[in-house]
Image (cartoon, rainbow over all chains, first blue to last red; front, side, top):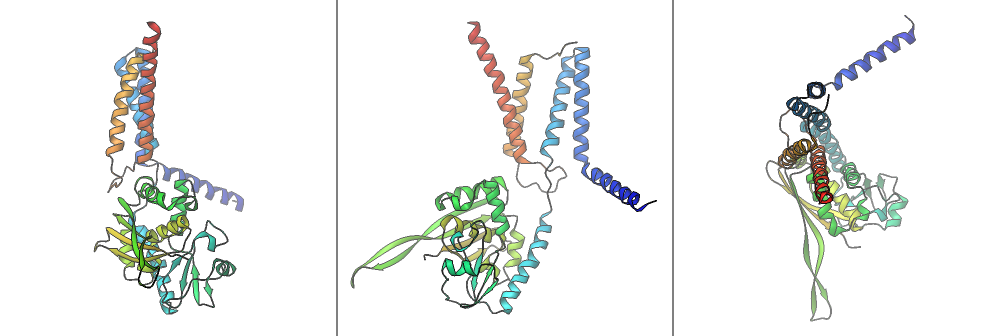
Length: 294
Length: 70
């Protein structure tokens, strides 16, 4: 047998396996129902029987419906945790070994050359001032920056954030911060079924502004956003990530990170994850985001 | 050799099916648990709505027939 023939035989066997793999019991039952329904319909016409017609209609309909609605693929939730945790753990270890102490800042599109991407800026030292958009744009393709020392990495929730944008049909840069609550809730609960419930609240903080020596005005600023996620599919990840100091409360787990990317894009301002709290079982996650005024 | 069901039989069948599907699509949980049949809730909802619209079309045809026969 020539080499080409062998390759063709192997390819044919792969194709047969792929076709057999697609035939699931559900699909088989659906096709059987459909075929039976069509036969019943044909007999109803031949024998002019309304009972056979109803049976045929019902079987054809349910056969088609089950074929149509049962075609989505799902993976087990445990697979999700085992894939995500090692990469988060690695990122945490790298940042710990390099001695990074600063809080991660999610950059808005004006800091980046491509407005559709998301980057997180982690300064090495605490209280380091965020560089200007022009300065970051010049060094955007580097991971570790100097003067001041910092790292510029792709956040763990960037792909999830892009998936949210794809499902929404628009970029978060075009969504107003006020509308983000409604859009995110719909995306998380109805469209992607990531969580059972998602609540977003803007918490005003009091800022005292001195007008004169003896007079000061107390101004309310809507710069803190509280997000409460109930029963998310990432609860296992969040539970595991609690021990990772740079992830939980700074860069955030994929779900908190994706929300931070969305807020940064919608507000057009840098965003930090102030703190994240979760229940023992990880079912309820509360994340507090702060929009940094430049 | 004629199809034994009349237009109104089909209309009634559409109504019953649409109600069953609409109720199912609204009551179905997004959390499937351990099951071998995985249902795409959105597609089920679309099918239910399509059946409902088809039934409403048959109703509209009936109303049009009543009005024109007056």
